[in-house]
Image (cartoon, rainbow over all chains, first blue to last red):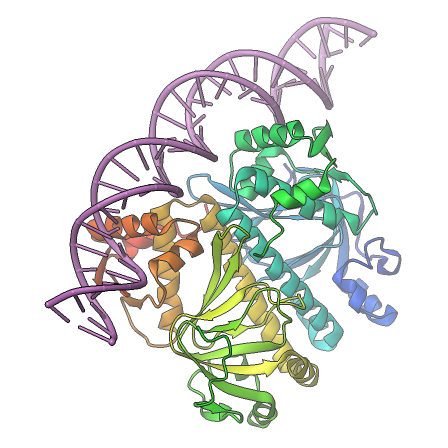
Length: 243
Length: 243
DNA sequence: CGGCGCTTTGAAGACTCTCAACGACTGTGG
DNA sequence: CCACAGTCGTTGAGAGTCTTCAAAGCGCCG
């Protein structure tokens, strides 16, 4: 509810990137110890409460972020309230690859989170100074582009069970980067968020979860946890892409 | 029909980038005259017949392309034939921003075209040598990312008339970069391609065209030409994005 | 001029959405 | 510790929209 991420407590203006738990995942991994030091000078680490908004669509794009803990959602809203959740941000992800001067989506925390914030101007300077960083960002942008195209395929042409299977598998793969967790997938987002990410309604998402459960493809030990029972079956459903 | 782009005739192994008609639009614009010369050494300009396939999904990603004339489509196909046209490529556009070792879509010519082809290895070398180029590619990747997110919003949440209005306006904007043409938009792609780009059927696209025509928003002087009669009305339909 | 491919139009049907009520879980206050 | 209220998710019935299937129209090229 608090629009301002700076909540006084739990905000360290100078960070400790070297010991960062997601450094191996984040774009910072492109930097040497010395270069990381330069990054620290312009980085602020913030705690962000669940439900807080980091930025709103249309505002001047003043900062870029790297998530170190928790989860964010990127949301675009049409005039009449129709929503698209462009993406979910997990620890190690970078938010700031855009050609626009203004934010193109709201950035909202869906769990108690922690972000590293850098001004776009400072980031630009770092990019110019350290070509590794620019290279890493390009690489990241290409990956996100691939990812966006996968999402588009799902949005345009898949049926609800296929969409959900695809979503679960891709989330599982992303989480596997952190914990080597096998078949349990955490769902930090609500059913409505999943619906707005897959172009469905919350009701359809709910019905589809039950369908997958009744088919013994997944189990739902908790509202926020999916257990993959039949990975092959899920992958089969998600069609696994190309012809 | 011809899978091999090299058709013998009309293929200049050494190009003339300096006088290229789309140089101001393409990524090459980041290069100095001298640097362009280095690019020329590794570039081949090909004529590509309408209907020809430049690459297939799954093949090793050996080349990147810049389109200098004509039009291409990028196509992903599911096992059962469902298609998504990921995007249309117009002169000046770059095809090759991907994190994958293999092509993620078929690249097909939908008009008699001409491309500049560069090997990925050579391109990588140029990127390392000329940081302008890498910077330009990052900028381009960010723009494409923005674009992909706009497409996702349309795919997920817009209704057919909104999708089509949005599509026409965005195509018009892209074509305006070339000819300063005002209200006439060329449609190099067929109705089926538009359908597979917007997540609809060909029939729905056709019906929606007639609807927009009957609403006096557009005219269709030819199958392949749209004339925008009421730009404001179209933009209104397309909702123009944010809340 | 005739044939072929693409597009348009029409009618029936399937699917998801909408609307509505029920159920489960969480956190709070008595 | 229990009861309760609020939020979020699930389940059900009906309606609307796009799709599917089918046929006719149009333009292009031989």
